[in-house]
Length: 109
Image 1 (cartoon, rainbow, N blue to C red):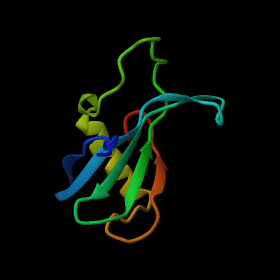
Image 2 (image 1 turned 90 degrees about the horizontal axis):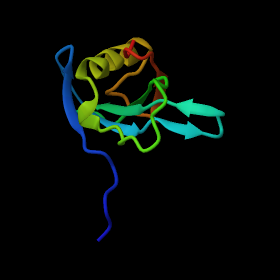
Image 3 (image 1 turned 135 degrees about the horizontal axis):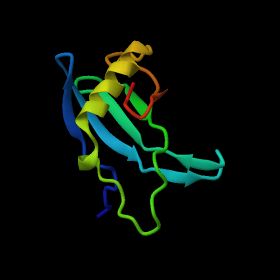
Image 4 (image 1 turned 180 degrees about the horizontal axis):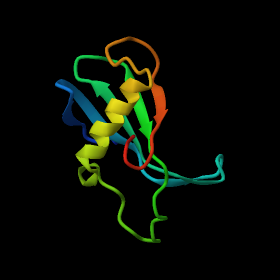
């Protein structure tokens, strides 16, 4: 039996609409960008298919041996603000199409 490595999904309501989000990428070192990349959160409308990936900037560099970031540790206010920012940037959560990357600041704006 194959193991599902995908992060668990969490529900959140933004402006009266239900969304589902999950931690897609941990903060990590990236050789293609020659530096650290921040976490990324995948978001979709609960009734839709189209995802947006909210890419956050790298915060303080993690210490060697520090535990991995867990989705339950992420502030829901940042996720909600990131979803609102993605919609303002043109993401249409109920439309069809490819996943759209949205770069947000550390506060989700």
